[in-house]
Amino acid sequence: MCAPASFANTSTTTTTVYLMGPDHCNGLWMQCGGLTKAGTPFNASDCCLAGLVCTPVDKYYKQCTPVTSETKPADYTPTAQLKAASDSSIHTFYMYRAVSLSGARYRSTNVNAGTLGGILWYLHNEVVWKTPRKFDMALIKRLKVSMKATQPLLKKGMTFGVRYAFDRGQCTGPYSCDKAFNEFGYFVGCNKLGNFPFPTYPVYYPDAIWYSLPGPCPSKTYMDENASCDEAEPGGFCESPTGAGNCTYTYEEAGNISIDELEGIDDYSSFTHQGGVEYNKSSNEGVGISFWDGINNTEKNEVRLAKARALFARKYPDMPTDDELPAPDCDFSYSKFFGTPLTNSSGGATGWRPWE
Image (tube, rainbow, N blue to C red; front, side):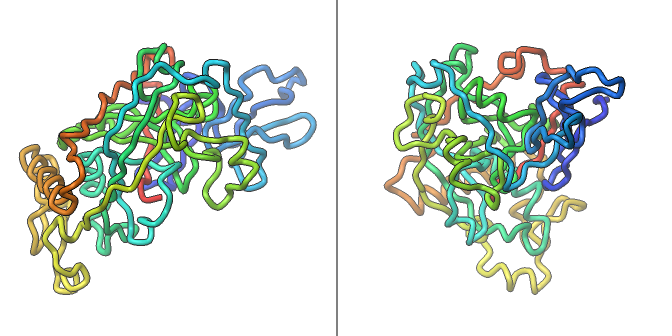
């Protein structure tokens, strides 16, 4: 059993649960400064978990409260190493995102992405079993990403950092995003599905990986973002990555496919109005369609993945395939990154909102 959570956020599709974690940051409404009840100085951590800020209540007491539009931006204070280019090789590969028709027009910074296998699992597990589809998902969008690791990450033996969740453009952990960005720069994060931070149970899609792409002002939601925050928290997007802390990746649009055409549905509205169901979690199959039957069937998942790859190749014959632009190994290591082993009490299972 995990230790009791100090902060829970259930706004994501999968309940987000944070524990104090290796950086010992405080959760929602917890004390982060001032005086103890005995009147002595509070000498525990003044750090708050992602999405929170240490706020004075009065001259004697501070507590962790939600970040708002009025919150002072986090202070990104890069070290000399983070101000310089790194020794990393540049890696160019595809990432994918599940988006609505309107979401396809939005930027792809302060978001989560994945390999094609990772996105198919997300659609299978979170989206297609709802009618209409959750968040009106309609497309699988492809990004051609080029990235370089920062020098502090390389010194730890990694190309990727922890995969953070982004909710409406805000970095929500696990743990403290600000502390890690100050130590490692605005790194690209990754996690192999089935491993920390989420999901930590078996996933039967091949090569299923999720990524995080920190952009300007990751401490706030899109609605609360402003110019001063963008300047104070520059993020990692730039035109030509150097591996400096504020220049770790770039991307370009590389096409999209519709979920309908992948499944073989001519008209989603007509299909559902006639009683069609893409996927039923209880029966583990669809009604009027068999594309998603068997979520934990590795062979069927491989067929689904092959169909998606073939559809991209058919629509964009002049673009490289996944095999021609292989992704680097997702080499994030909890023990290397956080400096402590991952245990049951480490916690940090976090949901994912790739549509924003």
